[in-house]
Length: 370
Image (cartoon, rainbow, N blue to C red; front, side):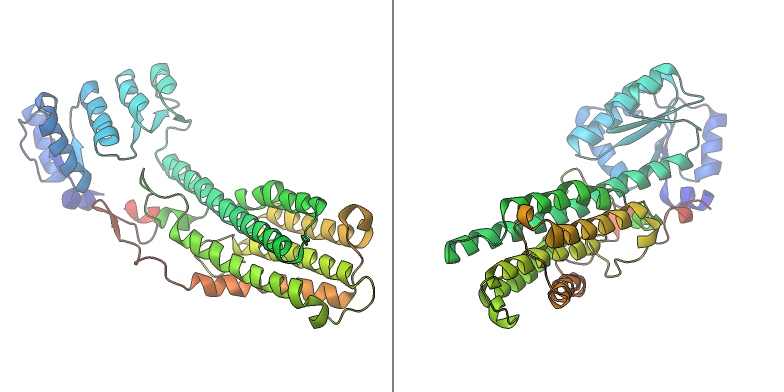
């Protein structure tokens, strides 16, 4: 730990005795302006000092509650940073309350600090903060996955029905079918994608700023790529499906509409698998560690089979042959390789290696403790 302090930290000491100041020199080797007092600086001077601290780590020794509150307030309001504060005493309460995320100690912390904080660390272990950050990032990423999946389904369903109604006068997806798709998209999709457990790779990602875009360029790339693929396939089936599938008889149109509906649903099933990771091609890694995801996928497929084969009057479908089932499943399955190809398309410059002067950890949080 000493090498990190020696290399990256400056120290600002205020009202320190000579013995305490000597200890700081021994620990960090660099003491800058020991008589300079942050609390007596003018507002512009404080902002300039905090701007320097933002780009290079700095320890503030013997800081008063007002100093902590001022530091947090300036970082949040003036510089637009997302600030987390840890504390256990009553004097930390103003800074804990002012911060975006306040973390108080559950054992040694006072009741005032706990009431002012957003998160209480029950075991007083700073390593728990790593788990808090990991779970927070996991929730954020899972919501992004769900939004990507939901927007893809919405775009395809809306464009398909609208364009088909304008050209042919009828929509291939009925109201009951759209209700089932909506159930897949909202309830089941949220259960499948929002319950993905966190992994250590999340801690290697750079933080998202206060003004960062929730829907990233990678998400737009995936949404557009999968939507175009599905729309092309479904449009070909709508226009040339009778000829390509060699359908004959008076119920050819009903069979074709059922194939379109079945293909659309299986496209979403495999698209949901592709949405398990926004950037990586290998979306099957860790699938069997999430039994909720497997259960949702199995339930969706079973209900789809029941709707097509046994609930024709309700869902406006007709039973399909095994060949047409195979066609629907294969078209849906190709969503995965298409998504893999789409993810290879660069959408932005290479991810920066630092964030406002802070370096990303190449090997995760374990490398920060030595």
